[in-house]
Image 1 (cartoon, rainbow, N blue to C red):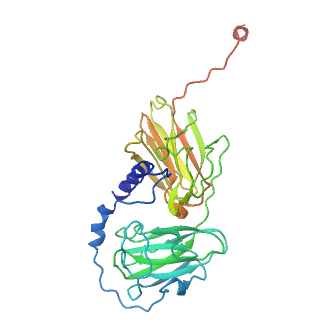
Image 2: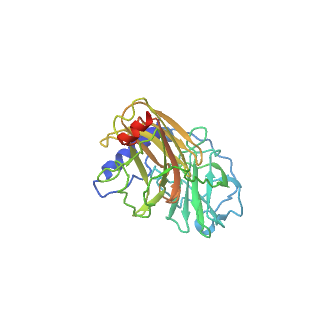
Image 3: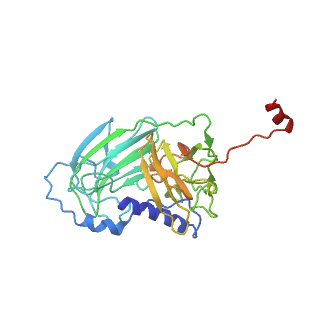
Amino acid sequence: MKIATSLALALILACTGSALAFVPTTSNVADIDANQALKDAQVFGEPDPQPNVGGDTIADAVPIPAWPYTDSGNTCSFNHDYDEVCPYSGSLSPDVVYSLVPTADDAFNISLCTSLYDTKVYVYENVAGNLAGCNDDACGDDGFKSELKVFTTAGNTYYIVIDGYGSDCGEYILDIDKQIPCVKDCPPGGHLEGEPDCEPNYNDVFNGGCNSVPHVFSPIPCKYAATICGKYGGFLWNGLSYRDTDWYKYDAGLNQNGLIICCNGEYDTLFGYLAKDCGAPAFEEYLILEPCVEGCLAVPPGDWWIFVATLNFGPAAGACGGDYILTVEGLDCPIAVEPATWGEIKNEYR
């Protein structure tokens, strides 16, 4: 399965990459070899001629006046002006450009899911090359259409580039709408993770797990039902997109009967558990969660690490300092015994 392979690769490369110079996680990679043949085999019929409705370059990008916004057109009569790797390189497809200037800090969902060719979409902030997000494959009947969530800052200009895989072009349908913000507040009794908010070139020496040198993990409080309030987000490392990854551990022997772990975060979230092996880390089970949607996993007895991170990387992940709530239920914690004097014990039986 493509996404499982991609996530396992991301974790493995995060560990090996630290030998060059510590980085908290890899950029968004995918199993290119497993999908390139499928994408290359796609055959699209000759598209019906349509008038040019988008802009050919950033200089003549079509402004988006309000949202929700829908437009359609055909990329085949445009020029090839731009390209971004996410993760396939060497695209020669013609591209079309729109522009959006938000009036407040917001998040937007940009969808090409009902388009008729193998699309790619990416967003530049203010200038070409300043990437705010990129997606090739996310949706559609074949899984090769594009969808992207972008976090925006009021007053900046965001250029939405509709592109294609390889040299593919065709009819597109562009849908843009604002996302309803998700807010997760730490409940009473929640244990604060305590990690500083990530920032550009952030070096995670707090709980980056296998991505940190040396490896570091946060302990889970020994309670039958523990609640941890964590922080996460995406950032740039020397211009490349990365994310804060949080790894949790519990004392060996405290999971004799299995656990229930749940997560709920403000951003698209990757959440799961994996065997304790930094040599080849891979998920045993994982969930991909939308903002403010809780997901739970049953963890079998044994010794595991628990992992929480944004699904995406860099600016597309969400700003550093986003909140999530992790709950762990079922730890076999020792029963605390309050100290008592001999006199107090005798008084109990008088």
